[in-house]
Image (cartoon, rainbow, N blue to C red; front, side, top):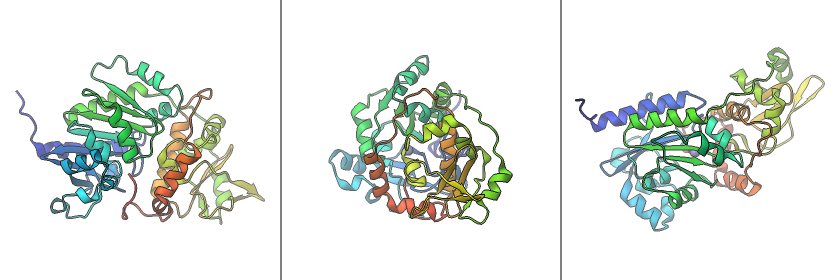
Length: 356
Ligand SMILES: [Zn+2]
């Protein structure tokens, strides 16, 4: 008989799972997604602005006292929004700030909670018929009890929507226009559930033509823009169906936070890329039929979100009815984290406090 793993092993196991999820761009991207473990009255939650992919390389987990936070959430205490007042500073020598999504990690009672921006989940969760399709896909998964939450701004509004639908056995939460939460008793159980659910939601990506990198390079030469590091990002503009889907509006919060709302297009004037005159300049430009360009000041988060949009859009069928975020929903993301949006242009990687 194998002994139950010691508690410290569970935290290490969660770090390993976090790093693996963060390294797979189909599971989560950039600073998006967060993981947590509850033990000894402390909720260890990914720090704001850090990357899950860094979970083994640096300390990214913030200790938050669970009971006072739950009381604050239940009592409508505004301090619940950032949870910074509930950080156990004695356990937090690095001065990390908890993720803005800490509140739903707190209210889901399971010891392990994993939240990711799984591309396959998002490709379903932006569709008006997404819930019906997702329910059908996971019907045969015996250990999955799924809850579907409507779109809400990340933070307390989203946590509240989850709380209203929370049942005792719920262990999978599909968040409209956002992503996936999976809960479990152990890291191993949770990891297996993540794999099964993401596998059930998986859809093949449409393949567009290959980008003409030489031509694209000549178009951006001498401009404020450069080519994306991963040529797969060009797929968004090379595939007319993906471009049409992405042109309907912003599909999920991180897009708005790191790339700005909607999809900006560049034009070619005398063999040179010309950007729309926005201030600040759009972090990404689509060049229909050719590819995308990334602003030279764009952060690694913006770069990751450019790739994510190509990955998501390529998995949404042309005929699907998509629900983009409304202008009001975009606005609350822009105004709420205007600082983070500027940060996305600063080329910084999680050094400053940020969103998610
Ligand atoms: Zn999220």
